[in-house]
Image (cartoon, rainbow, N blue to C red; front, side, top):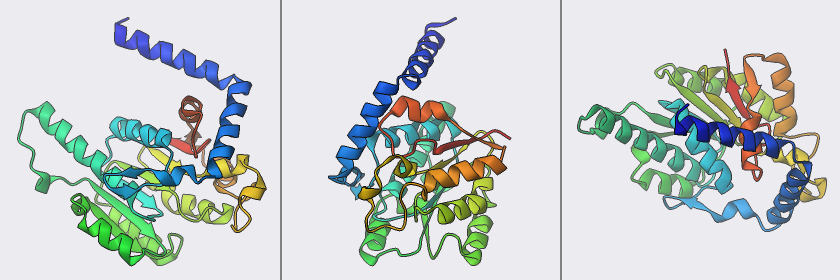
Length: 259
């Protein structure tokens, strides 16, 4: 066994050990609850745009994008656009790396890799900032409800041009909405790629943290994931990811398509 494989196996053993550490898990959740009171995830940006994610999940998404090497990333929920910019930058880096491996000049105009973002309300100041960003040529945005039939049809039509698809769901966080998004878009996920459902952590947080929201414990993305997984054996929860991260908004939310 070479040294790279030995290091990877050692990491996997350590991650498995963390998964059995209830004290660590409880401390991590306590930290998440305390940090959320100050809107911790709102304080980071990517290439100049607010991303509203935990740094740990950003790193995990980078790892998945490198592993999957998608040519399309579909995202529901746009907000300030930081996640779209992040995905576009990762796809651009894939092109750079592939060109370097082949020893050929990089021609960005020939890249087919794209990010598709959907939001029910893309505010003008955010829309203008995203369109003005240097990576905007890789981004397509659609305004409307992600679970409306016309939108679903448009997204599915757009996705037909691509062969390796990764899906991220991060819009309305109610059980019914997320489950409807999963039914609409999860099957666009390529085999061995991921459908990532964000904010499943709501299930593990006190209901008092969501006094003005339609979601909370018992009605959130994690409950939708569990309902979806029961009926869709082509997906499994990749628990190694949230176990490794500990501090994550997406426990049970990293769904790998296995068939």
